[in-house]
Amino acid sequence: MQSLKDTILRLEPTIDLLHDCLGFGRFAQVIRTSDGFFLGRAWGDVGFNHFLGNPSQTAIARTQRLFGSLSNDHQQELIRQLAARGIPPTSFGLPAPNGKPHLILVSDQ
Image (tube, rainbow, N blue to C red; front, side, top):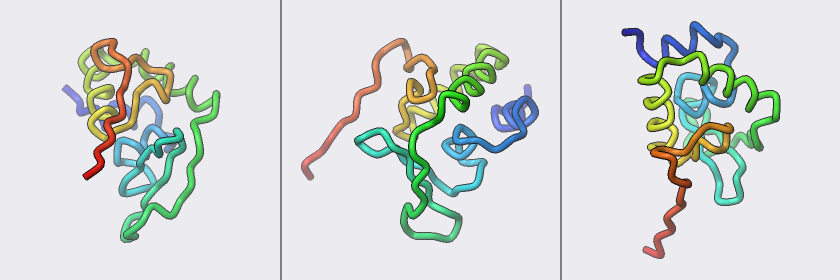
């Protein structure tokens, strides 16, 4: 079976925010802030110096079409990978892991 990365790049070769969030786009890492905006850390940078904003409706629609083209296994892997990075799949109009809403845990430590 083809890897998720290979499958996504085959189906949607244009680099988009989803590619960036999964680590094979323009940035080494992408985070989502508590107010829902995305920041990117360029390769070799220490901080998240690139403001990416929110996904546009066009980007969300593109991601939803791509998601529909993936096998069930790849769909689940994509949702798990986003959740593992602290990025709610619902940010892209995708279902939350196990159908549960995404929770952001805050520690005071």
